[in-house]
Length: 434
Ligand code: SF4
Ligand code: SF4
Image 1 (spheres, rainbow, N blue to C red):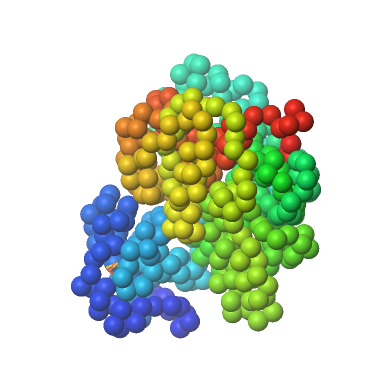
Image 2: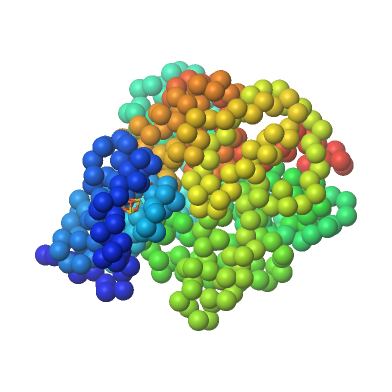
C-alpha cells in the first residue's frame, strides 16, 4: 500500500528542483556518495527521492526510508548547496514522515527508548561499568580475546573509553564556585554521553571555567538535548525535551549556557527554530538559544589565563560536523590547543570530513561507517600525532575505535581536557568543580 505523507512536510520548490538536477555540487562533499558512488546515496539523490515521495509519485518504501537513515547528517551538503535546499534537513524530515507512517526496526526502537532518558541510560551502561571495574576488560585484551569477536562487536567494544566509576550527573554539584573572584555566572549543559562516558572531560571543563572566573550552574534535571530524537524523526519528543531544558536554565538565571558537546550545542542553538511555531515558547526558546556557546567558543570571548604547564607532543584536531558546520566553530579549538607550550599543532588532512560516527551509525550502518572511519584513521596516522583532539563524544568514541583497530599510539582527547592538563592543579592544590 502506498503511504501518504503529510501535506505540511517541507519540499523543494519547482525552480529549486530544476536547478538541483543540473547542479551536483554536493556530490563532491558527501561521505556516503564517496563510499558508494551511487546517485541514490548522494544528497541530490536523496532530494529527488524525497520529492517524488512527498509528491505521491513514489511510495515511501523501506529502501527509500533506508537512504534517509543512511545519511550521516554531516551537514556538508547544506553548507555547499548554492540553491539553499538543505538536503541533510530534508533527509531528517523524511525520517519524521516515515516515523509517523511505519514503525522502525528494533535497533532504532532500542536506541530511541534509551537515549532520551538519562536515568535509563545510566542503568543501561551499568553492566559496562561492571565489565571495566572488575577488570574483565583488561583480561579480554590481555588474553587476546578481542580479536575473536565479530568485527562489529569488536569495534563497538573498542570504541568505549575508560568508563568513569559512576556518571558525572549525580556526582556534580549544582553550583561550582569560581576560583577567586566570581566574574560571571554561567550555566553548564551536561550532555548525556559526556556524563556517562567522558565524565572526567566534563569535570575538566568545569575546572577550566571555574579557573577563569566563572561560577557555573549545572541544573541536574536536564534531559537529553534532543538530537537523537531528532535523528529518529521524533519531532514531538524534541519539542518536549527543549521546553524542559529551557525552563531549567531560565530558573538558573545565567548569562551564558555552555556545553562541551558539539552535538548538544548545535541542537540547543536550534531550540529557537524547533519551537518557532509554538506561540507560548517561541520567544523563550529564541532567548535560550541566543545564550548557548560551545566551551571553546566561550573561552575565547573572555580574558583567558594562559596555561603555564607544558605538554610535550604533537596534536591534531578533528572537526565535529555539528561544531564546524552546525555552529561555525572551528578556529577556536585550534587556537586553544596552540596556547599550550610544548604541544605542536599539526593540521589533519580532511579534518572537516565526517568520521562516520553520526550518533549510532557504527551500530546501524556498520559497513559504511567503518569505511569512512578507516579513511579518517589513515589521515590521523599520516600526521604522526600523539593526540587527536575533538570536542564531541560521538566523534571521540568513533576515533577511539579507529586508532585501536589500527594499533596507533594516539590518545583521543577533548581539547579542553588538554587545556586543563596544561593548567595543572588548581591554585588551591585540589581539583576544582567536580
Ligand atoms: S548542491 Fe544543492 S542544488 Fe546542487 S545538487 Fe546538491 S542539493 Fe542539488
Ligand atoms: S548530510 Fe552528509 S551524508 Fe547526508 S547527504 Fe549531506 S553530505 Fe551526504
